[in-house]
Length: 182
Image (cartoon, rainbow, N blue to C red; front, side, top):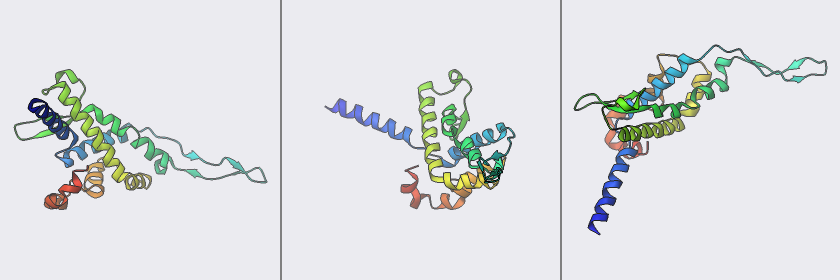
């Protein structure tokens, strides 16, 4: 009985460690870096022609929407973002610091492959929760052209989610319960 209880407690502690992100600011910056990559890969696109109806004179009715200001662009940028985060893991920099890195080859990591994959699932889940929390505002900012390359981290991590703001650091004890959900 004691052995099974010990085994159950150890499994629970491993799963609870894997399910939380200790440094939300660093994780948010990794998500922002991936969004930056998506922005840099973006190819110029034509306007969206939404004039599909004809009036009584045979003239097309509707409007032409600038692709850069369209909801389609926002969806294309955010769609698959969290899936791409599965290519990231937590790498130990020194005895006190860890950093989220994009992995090209899972076989040459300094940590075990299984542990690295667990971290990648953690950040992917974190990304999903982060986008769920900020998606409406982020989509609107993309549509208005406020999301620019080089400014995503500040916008997402400081302004929208406040995971990297000074006020969230100073209130970390009082916000601990609400931040544990992320």
